[in-house]
Length: 249
Image 1 (cartoon, rainbow, N blue to C red):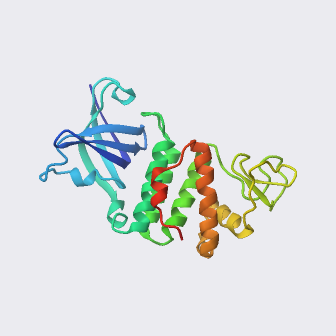
Image 2 (cartoon, rainbow, N blue to C red; image 1 turned 180 degrees about the vertical axis):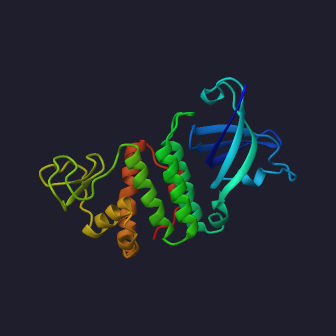
């Protein structure tokens, strides 16, 4: 038996019995963790509201044996709020749907429970902070997060140089299977010809050039978002359920 403490983002919750919940978190030091929170659905619960999706929390866990790899679930015994991002997200449909897609993506990119993924954790914390601040359109924040999650996972797309031969860009064609922009010689079946503006927007989102991203026209935002969705779907091998509810700019 052991106690351990970590900070994390609540990804989702599931009902357990009449008063408990299973909480799934992405933590800094232990990766994705599922834990039982006893009595949090009762109206008199002291920390039930702290363990809601989007919350950035400091949690103490009590584990029996090696609970993080399948031998039972640890218990959440103490919780302190670090940042209540959900307070500024759940009441706005655009932010909520974009944030839900971000949480689902983070969970999908952390397949193995108990395995640290600090880059993905820090990326999610920063993405939710930006989303909650409301300084950029929710769809742009979401697409920036999705692109950077892909990059952290080893699937960084190219939006300029050819993804196959390295020919300096801009290149005209785009292939999700080939890894992004491709030249005429490396073009493969299924390649599309996106606008240069959409590719520049995606490059800006990947690198954090918000001045360029915020100036993008709505049609180029929609076009770029479609490319991001297709690219993510290809590498995850199935789409995100939450993306169907995201508002299109």
